[in-house]
Length: 251
Ligand SMILES: [Zn+2]
Image (cartoon, rainbow, N blue to C red; front, side, top):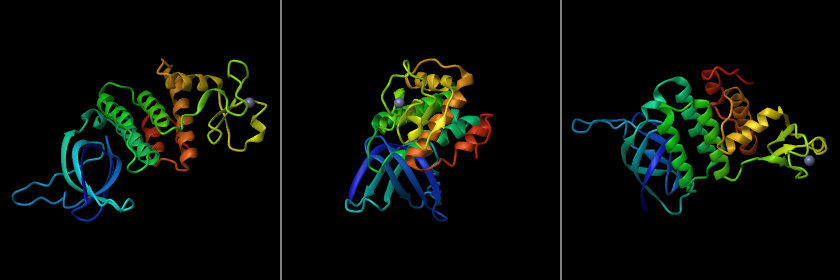
């Protein structure tokens, strides 16, 4: 039985029984870990129950059998370090946090460390009080895509490689990993027609540059579509976040 100590952010939290939880904890040094937290919901006469919330940061200790990758590890200690009240202030921020957590859990592999992504998610949670939720969601998605090697090519046609300055690229294909020009587009079934300004705005967000608020919904939809296609999973939080932000619900 190996023992680990790390810093972790709770990405998923599921009631397991009257007294236990199953958690997906994104650990800074050891990556995503699925852990069972036994008895955390039950207090005793001498010890109050320690709840563990979604999207809180804590010092975590857990044990895991080396040979049982597929099984749950066991949480042995949890000490809350931060619970990010800014995230819990209103629905747009709360759903933006849940969306970032859900996409992180979907896109990273269990036990695969991503310390820079961890730091980016930590900063996202911390800065939620002052940051605009849609802009910080788009920026975080770009960081996530880059970290897991799935960032689409937004500067050139993914089919023939011609730079976007030289040829109009009105389509986006997630499976081709980027834009498609008119010559390449007919060969691909999975594609989405985009306005040129949405592509420019997405490239600006990816580069950390300024972007007009009016373009952000389009950028979010593009990045969300891309993730859903490449991971072959939609996020259950997408529509909740869209509605909370005043965007139209998508089918
Ligand atoms: Zn092309």
